Image (tube, rainbow, N blue to C red):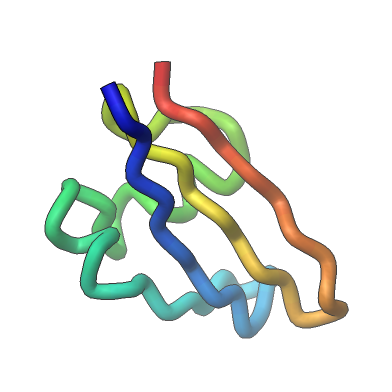
Length: 65
């Protein structure tokens, strides 16, 4: 199964502000669960990799299992 990579641009971490790509919305990433995924409380759906682009240029990847 091929993984789908979706991008989330994080504008601010506190309070959390982010832009979710259209692909992310299609696979179930939304405003309610994106912060939980970012903090590690929740995983994305199986086969989905969420790439968070942080304001300082760093990237954080979270893989659904």
